[in-house]
Image (cartoon, rainbow over all chains, first blue to last red; front, side, top):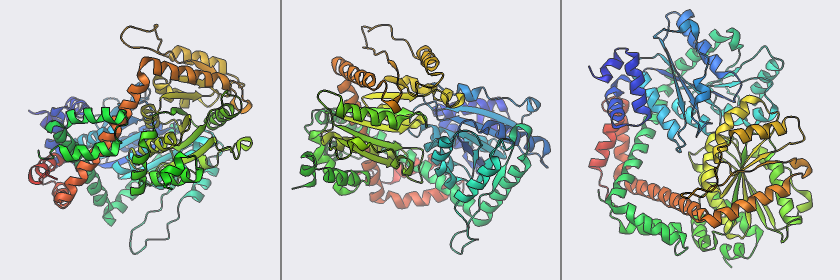
Amino acid sequence: MSLAQALLQGDRRALSRALTWVENATPEGEELLQALFPHTGRAHLVGITGPPGVGKSTLVNQLARYYRKDHTPPKTVAIVAVDPTSPFTGGALLGDRIRMRDLAGDPGVFIRSMASRGAVGGLAWATGRVAQVLDAAGFDLIFIETVGTGQAEVDIARLAHTVVVVQAPGLGDEVQALKAGILEIADILVVNKADRPGAAEMARTLAQWLPKVEGEGEEEPSWQPPILLTTALRGQGIPEVARALEAHRAFLQRTGLWQARERDRLEAEIRECLREALWQAWEVRGGRERLEAMVQAVLQRKMAPQDAVRRLLETTSAQP
Amino acid sequence: MSLAQALLQGDRRALSRALTWVENATPEGEELLQALFPHTGRAHLVGITGPPGVGKSTLVNQLARYYRKDHTPPKTVAIVAVDPTSPFTGGALLGDRIRMRDLAGDPGVFIRSMASRGAVGGLAWATGRVAQVLDAAGFDLIFIETVGTGQAEVDIARLAHTVVVVQAPGLGDEVQALKAGILEIADILVVNKADRPGAAEMARTLAQWLPKVEGEGEEEPSWQPPILLTTALRGQGIPEVARALEAHRAFLQRTGLWQARERDRLEAEIRECLREALWQAWEVRGGRERLEAMVQAVLQRKMAPQDAVRRLLETTSAQP
């Protein structure tokens, strides 16, 4: 039996191996993605983002527990924990995440940690492919949990169907204020650690900052992001978050946005692959050697980078 | 007189207009960069990064004041304040930075704020070009100040000759711990707010975390990042930071690393331009229409993205 077949039949060891292939972008990983592709497109991809210390991991763990233990029927859950703030040292901190003891051994929950490898766009790219594999493996919900850092939020907004932005009171004003921009990508806002002072006030402030939706316009369907209070550590507010996720999924499907987002994602993936392929073809046709020479000339200020680009395009055949 | 000439002769209004062109990537901006390029390569590019709230802006302001008032001979200083954590709302927060009143009207200091526009790699790209213009305009030192977020640090390390990582005591353990990876790109470490409890301890901790340099090996010259204590708000420790910057510059020039870093930077710029040009040529040759059709087929799961890429490369001529 092939790895793809084993994975599609629910073999979790096959899944782990497949993810490693795909993360490392091996040729086997590429073939596997191709084989799995017809089985993708069903999972609900949920991005969970916010500053460090707001309790994202706890919230995701509790959501997983809710979907396994309290939801009827139970849903299967995959968690991808992404750490874009550690470009060099790897994801040890997220690797240490609290395991859910009462879910140990449940094949309906799967956790994977990923750390950035320092490549521009590399982590978002790998995360998208990991999500594809988990989608093919049949998980109903895929949570992509990432520390909020400008770029991470842009990437997660491109990848996920639903973006949950998590905040918490008492983490320092400046950290909070700097993250104000992320409100614009939030489909659901969660104020976690709601048992702390300042939670209700924070929810009110967020409500003021949120762009107001005027009711569904004629041109474009609109969604008013709910603001939910949770105390994830004690499991409070979790069913409400799950209901909001379901409502957002229904909204996306009803309005056609579900498919529109998927289309954008697939087009971006194809574009990126094409760009890389065009570049590689150019390098192979002798571009690499000529580039070396041009860089020397630019370094000596004999020509500007723009001149180098123009000459390289003129003199190196673009024919594959 | 052309804008480039005016800029090279020290006209600050010409400089401001040139930066706007270049930031917005207008055709005039591209031409200008080309004209200015022979005049670049002299400035010392210094990246200043660290978490929110450590006092990066104050430190940079004080360094500027030092170079203008206390350094012999005075050096000219440009400050580029980059805010990668606000991909959507723009750089209002950094725009509010405290102006240096006693330097008002001094043409030897120039401040520019930049905010991310949400494009992948877009901010790093624009920052590099802004730095080129400031370099041509003759500034001795260009400080690129950015909030520390994984990707921002990678980008700044690629762009700058010297990377200063700023920390401060009392900002919360988790925030600090998550940033441990940035030690690996630090050329100089600054513990600011050194009048607060915990500063000396933080410096000791950082010293333990720092990879130790064994003395200059035979293969590769090595630099041991100094750890400096500052209280920037009161100007304490500023001359020591300036001396460390000078020592690092001397180290880079002595070892040939100065030119090696510049070479890498220029090569990356040329590569990026080439990739974009190859892609645009492919689109113009009819690729765009065929791509549309393929995306539809992929969306319907009739083929995998990998198949679409292969077919698009086969059937669309790569000849310009």
